[in-house]
Length: 219
Length: 210
Image (cartoon, rainbow over all chains, first blue to last red):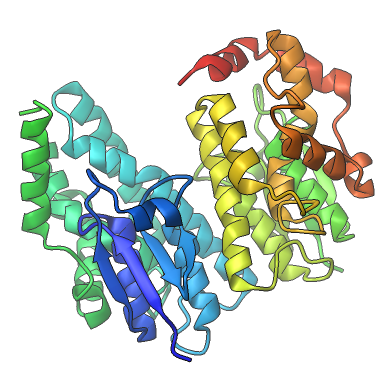
């Protein structure tokens, strides 16, 4: 019997993009359903009753929530193809540590940088740049966070590339100046089809934030 | 012989869950109590340069930080007495509730709402523990609810986790505390009381915030 795989997400969500990349890396066919976060579908509310958030993966009718948990699930179920996590427990722990760091330090500070003004933006931007520099330190001279190959940490971080232009414009700084290694790394990741086909367009993201700022009276 | 060191503090629930996991698996380790306020050790600062926090597990000289990352490392390195289910979907559910508890720790959201969600969605009537018949990582992460809650209610003066409102949580707490490794490794009540009392403002804030 063929697997039935459905992904519920929102085009802007970096967390949803992680899942798209993971599914593409493994060559898994799936149905994508775009959610309107102002009017969530009954399916989403039923599949994630606790948080009512995207992304949600539905595999043969059973829901899996939280992007890092979904990626690990995909890696465990479709384990023969293209492993996303290393096999050694210590390297796996290192990968999970950095994925957790990205979740704790990049999303919120990045969002605040785009959705605020004045002092609040300065504070958010400072935290964002500091955290990105820590990640740059971890990358070092390696081509990918995973070493020679694209891996779990690369997959977790690369979707935020789609927000870089918005960070720079609303935060008034240059990613190329602050984090040149990360720009190089991102370009390397984008050479992979599984990545380039899964990411939202940077300009569309920027326009979306522009609209949101007007709506919330931030402009 | 493998060298295993755990850097932690006595009253930290993040540290305690790691200790429970190691003891449930019968893995010997050296415990080092850190002084977080006046003097973090060189070893801690070197082992966790990113956050400088406990717990840190050091295995044959290699450090692992963040309690949930440590728990999964322990599970993978010492697979005997498994603390995660075998089925990938059930593992995903276990990890979902672990993340739920971690996020609530950080957000300090409305406690009653959190308890209500756990009661209705996390625990099942026919299951002794979060995962089923055996204790698992999810139970360890929720562990502090089993021993710290009553103390907090005493200090704050507000009864939050009434038995009739949260029957599943109360049953789970009793089941959890009766596991012999847990029973033998609960923090001393007086020592914990003293520590929690010193943080009363934090507790009052978390019990009333939305």
